Length: 253
Ligand code: BTN
Image 1 (cartoon, rainbow, N blue to C red):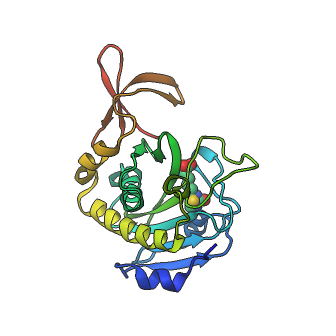
Image 2: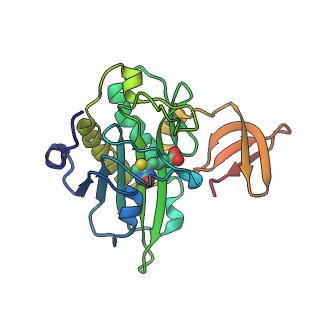
């Protein structure tokens, strides 16, 4: 197992306008960044292992030592919180963008709102936290858990069906290279999102939307709704067509 190498990563990305911290072990890279006041530059945190890795909806994110990539980025936006709608979808596209480099012919899909899947098995997950600032602007903490070299989960830590880059490519994958590509890709996508918002990514989303045309059931606080997925709206909400043909939008809440 090759360890992550901070100096190598810093020296190899095309973009140099960010800071990076690397931990051997940490509770959660997202939680760590949440303790820091946002600066002018994007701030990345990567860990070899997380002991309290967090997933969406209060779930855990299994984060064994040295196998996968656990990466978070604190990104300062000169925007208010409302204008970040759709950000998590754009982060998903940034992840798929680097995965295509390794898996050019694989059917990589984004499953609204936050999963990256291959043959319906989860390859990566995204956790987003938004921090409001006193000046009316905000910053986002974007956390990415990408299964890279994990090939087994003997103790059944993971409840849903999953896969990893190594399982798909059939070979060990260099995690330093994955981090380098991921940092450059994220910075590119986040900058574009800051400049033009979700509208610049609608077509790219359509190309990888795993739910489109499928029957979907959404559970909310008020009950559950079933319909046929019809893509997303300009706020990144999922569009569902009911049996009577009415299309309604649903957010992740
Ligand atoms: C999900 O699909 O439930 C989201 C998983 C997000 C996991 C990543 S790993 C890096 C960052 N730190 C965390 O504690 N969680 C995110």
